[in-house]
Length: 293
Image (cartoon, rainbow, N blue to C red; front, top):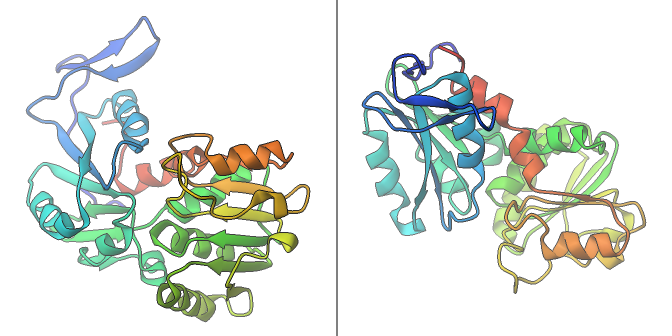
């Protein structure tokens, strides 16, 4: 990560960055002429939580930078990304639904994780001007599970969703040592391609399913957008799960999706989507070289 340009920064002693002493936490009050830019791309973007997590981090570290949401329709993604990549003071892009697969193809270089999963959730500008794609969704999800007391090693996991986030979560779960991973997705070609790529690295432990094996599962994961809207159908019926099965959702807003509410009503332990984001913070810091100037 040492070849990443260090974002320019101003401290409170000589710039427009101030400290909210009343709340006891630093906050960035003004954008300056030296401010470094980051953008999170999605459709929609009203649900994104990364600005509320990363902007306080910039302020706490004394980095003059800001992360802003950018609403991009799928048909406009390439032109928007190409334009942003030409902005001289833009150091990185974050990517959310539904752009993670398409964004991976817009990078000049891809990490091994991105090559395996075919999706990216972060792109950074390299020292030579090229763009490197990485995906921390999977590692963040696994970190969140472990921190919450649900270690996936040896578990039987049912994963619904083979899209950008689901593919990264699948790879990370296999790397974390799950005993069996069953992936389901209505897009059969996408599902088959993902399972074939995963099986090449973790043979014998991953399979495609027509439906998730809920009666024989330790952790059931929703990695689809179902739950963003209140009228969305359930990705799977939690009442069919065995007692004690952990139900995890990657939706961050609303925090308590219909799936998690119904799972909790059936007495099942639930795991919120925010854990996946907070589990990525250290990886973001290393990837973008975010440290005190």
